Image 1 (cartoon, each protein chain N blue to C red):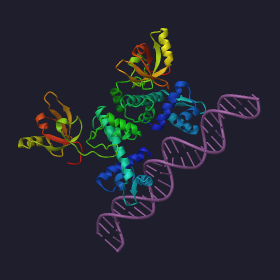
Image 2: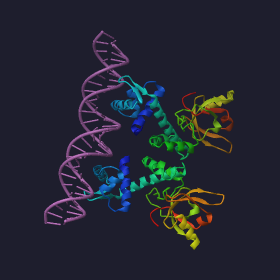
Image 3: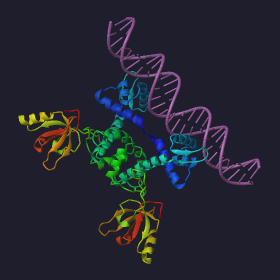
Image 4: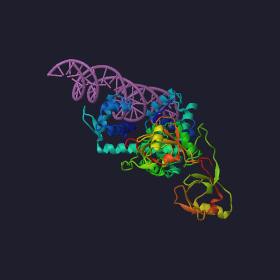
Amino acid sequence: MNFTSTEENYIKQIYHLQQEKERVNTNSLAAEMKTRPASVTDMLKKLKNKKLLQYERYRGFKLTEPGKKIALGIVRKHRLWEFFLANKLGFEWDKVHVIAEELEHVSSDELISRLDLFLGNPSFDPHGDPIPDRNGKIPQVKQLNLLSLPLSQQATVSSVTNQTGEMLDMLKHYGIGLGTVLRIIKRFDFDGSLEIRVAKQPPCIITEQVAKNVFVHYAKNTT
Amino acid sequence: MNFTSTEENYIKQIYHLQQEKERVNTNSLAAEMKTRPASVTDMLKKLKNKKLLQYERYRGFKLTEPGKKIALGIVRKHRLWEFFLANKLGFEWDKVHVIAEELEHVSSDELISRLDLFLGNPSFDPHGDPIPDRNGKIPQVKQLNLLSLPLSQQATVSSVTNQTGEMLDMLKHYGIGLGTVLRIIKRFDFDGSLEIRVAKQPPCIITEQVAKNVFVHYAKNTT
DNA sequence: AATTAAATTTAGACAAATCTAAAAATAAAT
DNA sequence: ATTTATTTTTAGATTTGTCTAAATTTAATT
């Protein structure tokens, strides 16, 4: 079956809200979609008719299994395009979302499977969110050394190996701790040092010796 | 100003029809758009209101200068995406058009200028049609040797240097002459021979010695 | 338990893009 | 120069997604 861009946007947004709350309600979806509750109700009926939604009036709603499959397909497209925009076209990580919102609705399946291959079957988008595979399976978090983190790929600090006081003191000075979200802005091959950016703080430089001891993972929410 | 996908499709199609006939008429546009003449009339009024069209009822119509600028922008996007699909994702040249029809409506200007750069500012799409630059200027035809023709890039035979009888006889046997449209299917590095395809004929092999004498250009219509 | 507040749905209207069927203008043919 | 045929436009209806305003259901409070 085929869906309009609007239907796809609703499905995707319901999926995202479901991640936080088992059952979704009309008002919160309306807020996310920047539309009115009455409009949401209209769409809910349509999606229910198409068997994508479990929905009884006044009772909240959630995606059916087929609905979830479709949501994951859209999320997959969105994140693959984000990866393309950041890693191939050189967009800043915070500019890719808006453009991917349009690209995700291009309908060719072969386009997506070829794009996936072209990008090297990436598992995480530039925001650190996992990219579902063609079957809708979401990759688990994967730890890697800060030195191996691709440029401008956001990641979360998950462990620090050298636990000496000097090291922790230094990291604390930079605002880096477990759970800190950061990304690499520039890699200096001369001495292996990294210019990194923690949250919205000004960028700072850390040496290769420090980076060597910091491990990160891509996904955002889990520590 | 901003346009819907539908408006953009009309504008683009009017532009293409104008290439053949100075002034376009309702029925032929309806045929191209696979819609009814009545629907075309409605859209013509809308485009006239937006100053993109010179149009008086029953009198035919053509794009204004601003309208033409917009058409060229859409054509540019379409052909850049076609180039991307064929040369980066490995699509066959005859599969790219349908997908580019969707991609061309993605609205970000920065996306297009970065894509253009990423692709190396190409001048011709995989069908041999010229890609307008950011100012709407259309590149002139460019001759090149058949040996330098990129794989699966369609081109038109524009001249043959060695005009001996044997050569012309051979080319005639293969169905190759001035104005013949062809493309390279495979390049054999072992002996430099080429597997080429002329129109819809079965593929054939020509030697490096022959190819060396054949010059082609990308654009389709001009000899 | 009755009242007030909040969330949700219905009813009816609107804009965009399409359609059919009928009317009007232009072009072609006798 | 009429008539006939073709092209184009109008008029009115339909679909999709949206809206406002009013009605209904559920939740919260006294």
